[in-house]
Image (cartoon, rainbow over all chains, first blue to last red; front, side):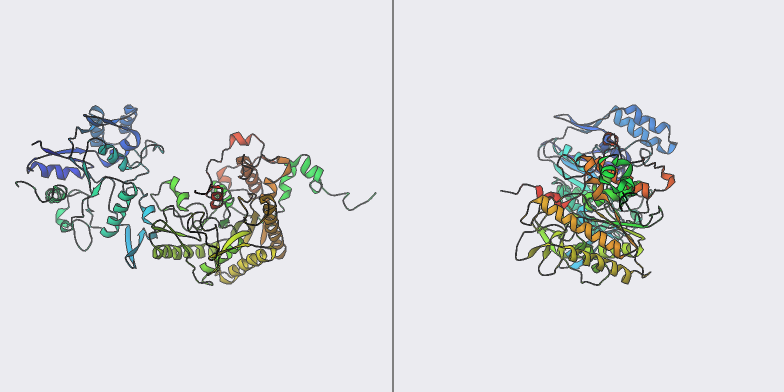
Length: 274
Length: 359
């Protein structure tokens, strides 16, 4: 029987999962990882064209790569790893290789995020009032905010100060999700939301409702991987202190526990040998 | 022979003030009573033409109050869809003085908060500001909570403003029979269902229009912490009615409606030293413009029309020098139609009356 492919695509939060995957094997499954930093992901989504090549995969078509590389000539060494990342994308623009029918795709931190600024309060009879930075907003308006439910309306550095955002370009990660969905039949597509690692107070319920609203509104084929409550501080909703790694990211222990949680969700309880 | 018109200036004569050299006398159409300084805190409201005024004031760095701003992170092209950045708060278009006074009374707590939800699918639309949430509210409770927040913002605006610029738009409206609330648009146009038992048509006359405007001034005076009334600049929207619910021709209905509003503005100005009138209506309807101040539909004001109105305004109320605005002398020439494009569409519920009906 052919092995099932589990393809992870996402931002820097993917690293902890990839490291954890090296430590274990999952029976009948091949785990693949494609990392694109969040600043680069915004840029690629907005500027590149996503080409679905049947039987081959999905690749970026980036106009004027020289102009993109030139951005780094004007920036400090802090951004060198990102330049390397961009060079890698330019030489190998394949985002995803061929996916067999029935594969699982997990988007890791695809700008569908948790923010300490979003809260909800009960209005009675199961109704809620949502506030973002104390301003009441509907789920519809919230779903349009940058970096909260898959949409974005600007770059971040190093691109923010160097390149104009294309107002006609793509500004939603769900365009990428849709492109991936077209690659093969019967794909099972999931979103893994990286928890907050700063100890902020996160209203998980509000985010869950918002993210579900967004998926429904854009008729996405995606499913949300449930919040891993056992990895979170019940008092704050952010990751337990013992799981914090480099600023804003989880450590190796978190990676292992998160991968475990993700696989449980996407494959059911059958995790194979540990 | 001596007669009382013998020594009058050119703008007092139709031939020299309108038919000939109209551009050089255009500024005299505005009999300015008070100045608006760049530091004055301004609040704008009114029918959809008021959106042009808001944009221009913003563009020229006037101190326009916005106490219900778009949330950070909402893309700019979504602001107006969600009722942000159109006016000083998220009230949408206020077409009639009665609508203005009921909003003011609710904001100051002199009238119970009325919630009029219209159902659209599984969502709810606020009938008193139907264009501010394109997907509606999730529940009536949510709609009510948003309305309370909005009224707090409106009260703040009314308390803080130095100048209130209000564009009078319509006299025709629909009134909820139970609450007495005047609606900005008939039920069934944006959402809800038209039920003659629930709403009735009203066409406010001069007495009711003046009474509403007087009540508005009184509310300001009574409830502002400073116990004063700010400067109020009224203008009449030159935009004709999209449709009339009276049994008359739309042209006749438009003329009567605009006449009522224009007379009410003039009368209010006569009665109150802090009230002035700016002639948007007169400029756009100027016969010498030969309809070039209207778009092809003969209803929407053209970019040239808006430019001409606002240039006149800015010559009388120069913006901050730092902005470097140099208003052209006299009226805008037709060259402006190619130089200046006002590309942003207005948010206008009334326009929706033009939509073909289903079925």
